[in-house]
Image (cartoon, rainbow over all chains, first blue to last red; front, top):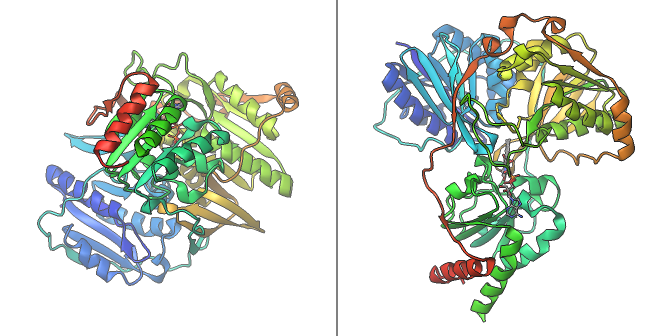
Amino acid sequence: MREIFVLTEHRQGQIRDVTFEMLTKGRELAGKTNTELTAVLFGKEVKNHAKILSDYAKNVLLVEDAKLENFNSEAYQKVLSNLIRERKPLLTLIGHTSFGVDLAPSLAVSLGTPLATDCVDLEFEDEKFTVTRQMYGGKVNVNAVLRKAESYIATVRQATFPVEKGAPMNGEIIEVPSPLSEEITKKRFVEYVLPPPGGVDITAAEVLVGIGRGIKDESNIPPVEELAKVLGGALACSRPIVDKGWLPNDRQVGSSGRTVKPKLYIALGISGAFQHVLGMKNSDLIIAVNKDPKAPIFGVADYGVVEDLFKIVPPLKSKIQELKG
Amino acid sequence: MDIIVCVKHVPETAEAEIKIDGTGKAIEKNGLVFDINEWDDYALEEAVLLKEKFGGTVTAITVGSEDADSVLRKCLARGADKATRLTDPKFEGSDGYAIARILAKVIKDLPFNMILTGTQAGDDGYAVVGVILAELLGIPHATMVKKIELNDEVAKLNRELEGGLEEIVEVKLPAVLTIQTGINEPRYVSIMGTRKAMKKEIKVLGLAEVGLGENEVGEAGSWIKMEKMYVPPVEKQAEFLKGSPEEIAVKIAEILKAKGLV
Ligand SMILES: Cc1cc2nc3c(=O)[nH]c(=O)nc-3n(C[C@H](O)[C@H](O)[C@H](O)COP(=O)(O)OP(=O)(O)OC[C@H]3O[C@@H](n4cnc5c(N)ncnc54)[C@H](O)[C@@H]3O)c2cc1C
C-alpha cells in the first residue's frame, strides 16, 4: 500500500509539536486516500521517540546514525531522498519550521518532486492535490494546485492542525540501515545558543501591552510603557520592534520569540501575522487597537478598536488611573 | 568576496486595503506602494557590510517588471556595484521554483563567493527561492541566518530556530544564505547616493538571453498553480468598540473592571 510520510522533527531530546500536528492531519489524509501513515524518524539513539510515534502512525521508519544526532539538512536530505525513492510515498509532510525550510526545497529539487510550502490545508480530490496557503501577511488565502506527479512534498504551518491522538495505532517500528557512508562535508552543526536572558520575563506577566510597527518611532514607546505600568503589566512587542533594536529580544512574542498566556493582552498597532498570533492567541482576554479594520489581529481579539493607537493610549491611561483612584 | 543578492519588488500591504482583481487569482495592485521586500533589505545590507569589510563586489538581481528598477536603484544607492533585471512576459505566473530556475541560469555564469537572499518574500511567503537556487547550482545553503562570520572558505552562521533559540552551523563557500530580519540595521540612502545610482546601468535580460525555454518558466515551469484567491473566512471576529477615543477608553476600562483586571 502507498504511504503518507510525516518527517519527525525533534530537538534536544523532545519531539516537537508540529510532528503530532502533521500526524493528525496525515491520519485524516491517509484515510481519505487509502494510504498508510508512516512516521519517519532520524537521529542517534532515538528508539524512545520511535515508541511514542508508533501510537500515532501505522509504520515508523527509523534511521539511526551518529551523523543524524542533530538536524543537518545535508544529512537529512540524503537519507530522506533515499527513502522517498525506495518507497514512493504519495505525500511527504515536513514542518514549515526552521528545520523544514532548510530541507524541503532542496529535497524537492533533488527528487524532481513538486513542493508546496507553508500550507494551512491540504486535500486530494480525484487525481488533484490542492493546498491552501496564505499570502500578504494573512490578508488573503489562495487555493493552489500542484503539478501532477507520482509523489508530492508539502511543508505545513505550525499550530494549524489541532492534535488528536485517536486510538493507538500500534505502528510497526522498521529499522532502516543508514545510507550515510561518507562524512557530511558541506555543512556542520556546531551548537545551540540561547540569547542571554534579559531583565523582564514576559511569560510571567499577567498583563501585557504588545506594540507593533504601528508605534512608528522609538520615541513613542515610553507613553505606552506607562500604560503597561498603570495596568500593572509589562511591555511586549512584535518582531519588527526587536529587529529595529527598540526593545530587547526577550520582549518579542511569537514563533521566534516567547509564547505568552497573560490574563490580558492589549495589541497596539500589530497586524496579527500568524507568527505573532502563535505566541499570544491563548491569552485570556485580547484587546486589539489597529487603524485597519481588516487587520487579521481582529480575528483573534475578543474586543477590537479601529482607531489610531495614539488617540486611544492617553485617555485609556487616565481612565485606568481614575479607576484605581 | 563577490556577493550576489537576489531582491524582489513587493507591495506593502500591512496597512493597505486589499482587493482581489478580476482574474480572481491576484490582488489589485493599483494604488499600492511597492518597495524592496523586507527580508531582502537586510540581505542587501549584509552584502554591503561584507564588501566593506573584505572588499569585492555586490551584484543585485531581480526577476520582475520594469517597475522593479526602483528596487535595483535603491540597491545601487546603498552600495551595490551592479544590477541586473530579468524581465519577460513569459516569466509571469512563476512560482518560487521557476523564479529560482531563472536566477540560477543567469547566476551560474557570474563570479561569486556567496549568494544572499531574504528568508522569504512578504507577498507570497514561499521561503523557497534561496534553497532551490543553491540546489540548482550544486552548492550548500543555510536559511534564516542571523549572524555571519567568515573564516577562509567557511562561513560560521547563527541560524534562527523557534522560541528564541539559535543554532551555530558551518557551511562551506560558495553557498547561498537566506537572511532573517534583524541581522543588521539597513542604512538610509543619502541623496547623493540616490543621484549617483540614477546614472548607473541596469542590465536587462529576457527569456532568450537567459537561455531558458518557454516551458521552463511561468506557470508551465512551476510546481504550483494558483487556482483561486479569496478573503479568509471569518471564524471569529472581535466585538468592535465604537465611539470617540474618550468613549472607547471608558468602555475598555469598564471591561477590565468587570473582569477584575483593574
Ligand atoms: C520565520 C519567521 C519568524 C517570525 N517570528 C515572529 C515572531 O516571533 N513574532 C512576531 O511578532 N513576528 C514574527 N515574524 C514576523 C511576522 O511575519 C510579521 O512580519 C510581524 O509580526 C509584523 O509585525 P507588526 O504586526 O508589528 O507589523 P505590521 O505587519 O507592519 O503591522 C503594523 C500594523 O499597525 C497598524 N497601524 C499602523 N499605524 C497605526 C496607528 N497609528 N494606530 C493603530 N494601528 C496602526 C497597521 O494597520 C498594521 O496592521 C516572523 C517572521 C518569520 C518569517
